Image 1: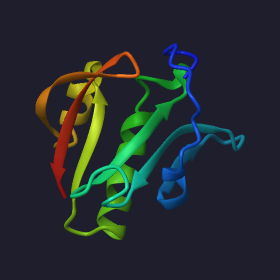
Image 2: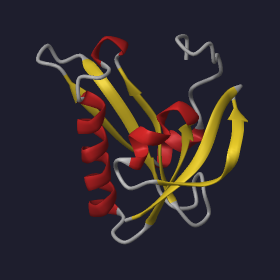
Image 3: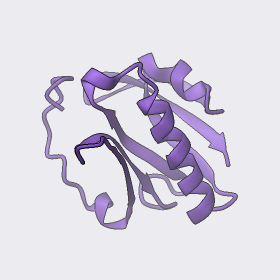
Image 4: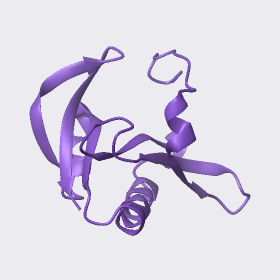
Length: 122
Protein backbone atom coordinates (compact mmCIF):
# COMPACT_ATOMS: atom_id res chain seq x y z
CA UNK A 1 0.00 0.00 0.00
CA UNK A 2 2.73 2.43 0.93
CA UNK A 3 5.01 1.43 -1.96
CA UNK A 4 2.27 2.16 -4.51
CA UNK A 5 0.96 5.22 -2.70
CA UNK A 6 -2.40 3.53 -2.43
CA UNK A 7 -3.54 4.24 1.09
CA UNK A 8 -6.88 2.68 1.99
CA UNK A 9 -8.36 0.58 4.74
CA UNK A 10 -6.94 -2.84 3.91
CA UNK A 11 -9.45 -4.78 5.96
CA UNK A 12 -12.53 -5.74 4.04
CA UNK A 13 -15.09 -8.33 4.91
CA UNK A 14 -13.91 -10.44 1.96
CA UNK A 15 -11.07 -11.77 4.11
CA UNK A 16 -13.62 -13.54 6.30
CA UNK A 17 -14.58 -15.77 3.35
CA UNK A 18 -11.19 -16.13 1.68
CA UNK A 19 -8.37 -18.64 1.80
CA UNK A 20 -5.02 -17.07 2.67
CA UNK A 21 -1.73 -18.26 1.23
CA UNK A 22 1.81 -17.14 2.02
CA UNK A 23 5.45 -18.11 1.80
CA UNK A 24 7.78 -17.72 4.76
CA UNK A 25 11.55 -17.51 4.74
CA UNK A 26 13.76 -19.63 7.01
CA UNK A 27 13.35 -17.09 9.82
CA UNK A 28 9.57 -17.41 9.64
CA UNK A 29 8.97 -13.99 8.08
CA UNK A 30 6.21 -13.77 5.46
CA UNK A 31 7.83 -12.87 2.12
CA UNK A 32 4.89 -13.33 -0.27
CA UNK A 33 1.14 -13.54 0.17
CA UNK A 34 -2.15 -13.85 -1.70
CA UNK A 35 -5.79 -14.61 -1.01
CA UNK A 36 -8.34 -16.74 -2.85
CA UNK A 37 -11.93 -15.57 -2.87
CA UNK A 38 -14.78 -18.03 -3.49
CA UNK A 39 -17.27 -17.47 -6.27
CA UNK A 40 -19.74 -14.75 -5.35
CA UNK A 41 -17.39 -12.77 -3.11
CA UNK A 42 -15.70 -10.53 -5.69
CA UNK A 43 -17.28 -11.86 -8.88
CA UNK A 44 -20.63 -13.60 -9.27
CA UNK A 45 -19.40 -16.31 -11.65
CA UNK A 46 -15.71 -16.62 -10.81
CA UNK A 47 -13.40 -17.40 -7.95
CA UNK A 48 -10.69 -14.77 -7.62
CA UNK A 49 -7.09 -14.38 -6.56
CA UNK A 50 -6.16 -11.05 -5.03
CA UNK A 51 -3.88 -9.12 -2.73
CA UNK A 52 -0.88 -10.81 -4.35
CA UNK A 53 2.26 -9.26 -2.87
CA UNK A 54 5.94 -10.15 -2.73
CA UNK A 55 8.62 -8.59 -0.55
CA UNK A 56 10.27 -5.84 -2.60
CA UNK A 57 13.76 -7.23 -1.99
CA UNK A 58 12.76 -10.66 -3.30
CA UNK A 59 11.11 -9.71 -6.57
CA UNK A 60 12.55 -11.35 -9.68
CA UNK A 61 13.88 -14.24 -7.58
CA UNK A 62 11.09 -16.72 -8.38
CA UNK A 63 9.20 -16.26 -5.11
CA UNK A 64 6.19 -14.76 -6.90
CA UNK A 65 6.10 -17.67 -9.36
CA UNK A 66 6.30 -20.14 -6.49
CA UNK A 67 3.43 -18.35 -4.74
CA UNK A 68 1.24 -18.35 -7.86
CA UNK A 69 1.88 -22.05 -8.52
CA UNK A 70 0.82 -22.80 -4.95
CA UNK A 71 -2.25 -20.55 -5.11
CA UNK A 72 -3.39 -22.13 -8.38
CA UNK A 73 -3.01 -25.60 -6.85
CA UNK A 74 -5.14 -24.44 -3.90
CA UNK A 75 -7.77 -23.21 -6.37
CA UNK A 76 -7.88 -26.63 -8.06
CA UNK A 77 -8.11 -28.39 -4.70
CA UNK A 78 -10.78 -26.21 -3.10
CA UNK A 79 -12.69 -25.07 -6.21
CA UNK A 80 -12.21 -27.76 -8.88
CA UNK A 81 -13.30 -26.77 -12.37
CA UNK A 82 -14.16 -23.18 -11.44
CA UNK A 83 -13.16 -20.22 -13.59
CA UNK A 84 -10.70 -17.78 -12.02
CA UNK A 85 -10.78 -14.03 -12.58
CA UNK A 86 -8.23 -11.51 -11.39
CA UNK A 87 -7.83 -7.76 -11.52
CA UNK A 88 -4.20 -7.56 -12.59
CA UNK A 89 -2.05 -4.47 -12.47
CA UNK A 90 -1.35 -3.73 -16.12
CA UNK A 91 2.42 -3.95 -15.81
CA UNK A 92 2.01 -7.57 -14.63
CA UNK A 93 -0.05 -8.86 -17.58
CA UNK A 94 2.87 -10.89 -18.96
CA UNK A 95 3.56 -12.39 -15.52
CA UNK A 96 -0.01 -13.67 -15.19
CA UNK A 97 -0.16 -14.74 -18.85
CA UNK A 98 2.65 -17.22 -18.07
CA UNK A 99 0.16 -19.03 -15.81
CA UNK A 100 -2.51 -19.15 -18.51
CA UNK A 101 -4.48 -16.01 -17.69
CA UNK A 102 -5.94 -14.11 -20.65
CA UNK A 103 -6.79 -10.41 -20.71
CA UNK A 104 -10.48 -9.62 -21.04
CA UNK A 105 -11.75 -6.12 -21.73
CA UNK A 106 -10.11 -2.75 -21.59
CA UNK A 107 -7.69 -1.28 -19.09
CA UNK A 108 -9.27 0.56 -16.14
CA UNK A 109 -8.11 2.44 -13.08
CA UNK A 110 -8.41 0.81 -9.68
CA UNK A 111 -7.13 2.95 -6.82
CA UNK A 112 -5.47 5.16 -9.47
CA UNK A 113 -3.41 2.20 -10.77
CA UNK A 114 -3.98 0.80 -14.30
CA UNK A 115 -5.49 -2.70 -14.18
CA UNK A 116 -6.95 -5.26 -16.57
CA UNK A 117 -9.32 -8.12 -15.92
CA UNK A 118 -7.84 -11.53 -16.69
CA UNK A 119 -9.49 -14.95 -16.71
CA UNK A 120 -8.12 -18.49 -16.35
CA UNK A 121 -10.12 -21.60 -17.06
CA UNK A 122 -9.17 -23.92 -14.20
